Length: 215
Image 1 (spheres, helix red, strand yellow):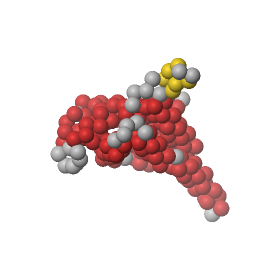
Image 2 (cartoon, rainbow, N blue to C red):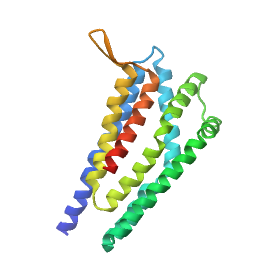
Image 3 (cartoon, one colour):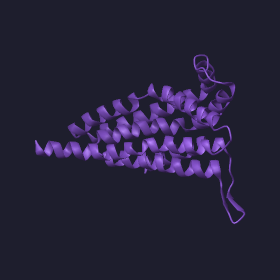
């Protein structure tokens, strides 16, 4: 019983630590948006609606993590490492295929979403801008779902934690740099691209996380 408890803690603690960083990203995005323009409420509304659209979209593909994790755990328990590798390969391929479909129908999805989402034209414009930039992280985001499920199935929650921490950390830094820019002694080192920088920072973070997962 003690060994089982240790094994559970070994898997659970890294996941808990990774999840602690998740709220930080939303807080930073809202804080950045609030400092970009005098109309902070519109900026924050754009991020809130844009993020909601992605929550609605990606929620449908949670099976990439749960399903991959369950199948990988079964193969790992049998000691079938070849099947473990095949499961990851299939999940990765499915993730990329779904992402290509999402990229193809992105305009249709946004138009359909705003038929039921009620907001001001200004907020709708910013949310659409946020969505059309961040959607280019879809291949990385969906692939990361599959990778994190596979890591956990392989009893390696530390790698899943490293991916989450990397994504969240890079997102904070990249969003700050791109949205606000960096100027030192009158010299612009990183030009500010404003509101778009928040979404671009997320794209950079997701692709960085996928690179870490692959490594």
